[in-house]
Image 1 (cartoon, helix red, strand yellow):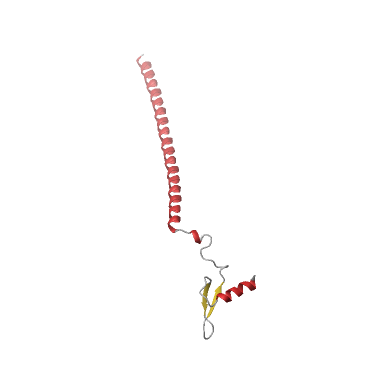
Image 2 (tube, rainbow, N blue to C red):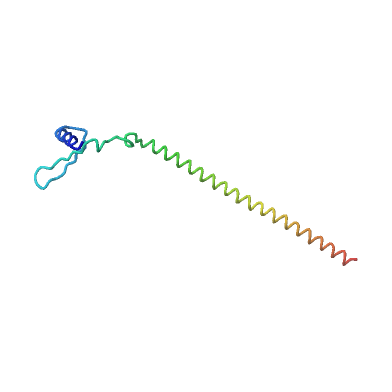
Length: 117
């Protein structure tokens, strides 16, 4: 294949061909043109053929918004769990304080009865 490739490159050297060309300056005189055979450098193949900037921006924006919503939802849930924990803790402490107050009132009532009796 190597000989065939160079033969095709030489054929295209004088033509306006789809092959890629690069001008390389030589030591003196006329610059040399180097042609790259199109089998090795094809424009529009694979990813670059179907590349659409707006499509990629839309995809990235959708992924970003989706990830952001998941992140915010997780944080909202964590905030709700923490708030619920502290609300339950406050209720528990208020119940315990009410129990202590009833015990203290009962003891004071008992002491008062003993002193008055």
